[in-house]
Length: 145
Image 1 (tube, rainbow, N blue to C red):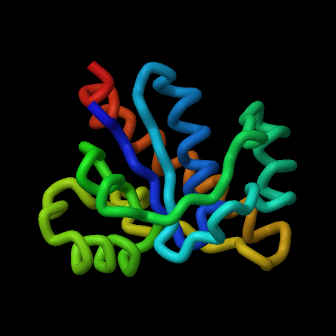
Image 2: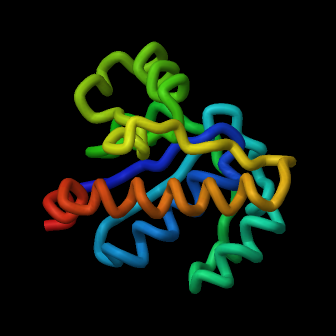
């Protein structure tokens, strides 16, 4: 089982944070992250790393990766940060229907993209991601077993 795939655009802010939060909650579940327009080879954004460290999350080994067919095929659950990302994944990989959702689905929100924005945008993104993970935990706990 491949578990959960977190998807954002650049794969240097939101999806690495979502992956780290989920791995802390369900350490035995395989969790990956990728970007629809990944800044391939880049580390997590410096402010993201700082805020993650303050929350006890370690992103030091993160390297941005582009979303691939293999990622989509292997994952049992794929969580994009926005409705547009969800739609793009489904348009590109129609076979993934039924396993692609928004991380903020339960709250009916898109996770704000903080990239190159002010500190408050990063704080909001972290709060939305944490809420999204909390809301998905029951589903993910089932996948982890």
